Image 1 (spheres, rainbow, N blue to C red):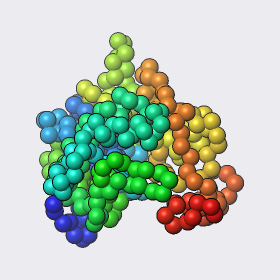
Image 2 (image 1 turned 180 degrees about the vertical axis):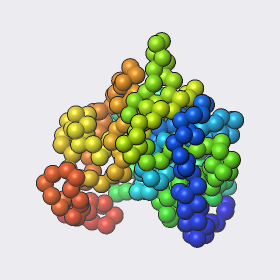
Image 3 (image 1 turned 60 degrees about the horizontal axis):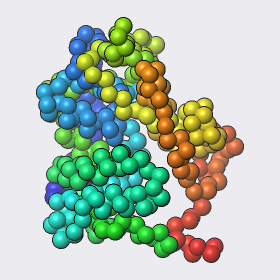
Image 4 (image 1 turned 120 degrees about the horizontal axis):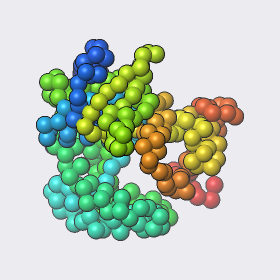
Length: 306
């Protein structure tokens, strides 16, 4: 386990933010990329790293001016069964138990195929982050139990002191050599507006816009990792069925990846599984209201009968 000092994290983040952005659009637009990844966040950045390790040339496009997406705001809480950390602590666990716990906790509503894929690869994911320097809080992993709500059947739940940014720091360090070599490049401040389709319907690249300039990027494969839509009130109401009020997510979570997928013949599912947050007092009646206060409903700190 590697202890990473806060100063090292900040230096890494600053270097990453300044080094990864392409100086001019021309270089990216004139390159035939192996992968074009739409979204420089939780899914897109690891995908870029793994593709680069296999020899691919990768372009990551994001409308924000810095990478990381919701990792800048997320709690960074992750879980896995069968990790090196569990083995070192003598914790007996398995992906099958993890699968059973998730299906129990979600009352069987979670997609079993997605859950199965997740639990089968979760340990490798956490080991990869830990090998890269992720430092869990003392006493972790935990089961996540709460009064009246049993958590996992084994301790497998963990997160770092710096929450989602701790995960971003690990990914940033891993990506740095590929960014420096040009194997991976980022096109920041750029929003993908459409997919380039061949006459046969194959995706051959993307159309994008930055500063009023229209751009075209071509690649052998296009990966969409920008599905968040919580800051798009029109899409939110259409998919969830209730109005959006609070504007509490990443400003660029506009559902662009969902729109792009549908434009190429994809479809959306799972709208009925939306889970609202706990009650809050907002600063205004309309989106995008800031949260003034939030009701404390955690039973460890407020008795249920209150």
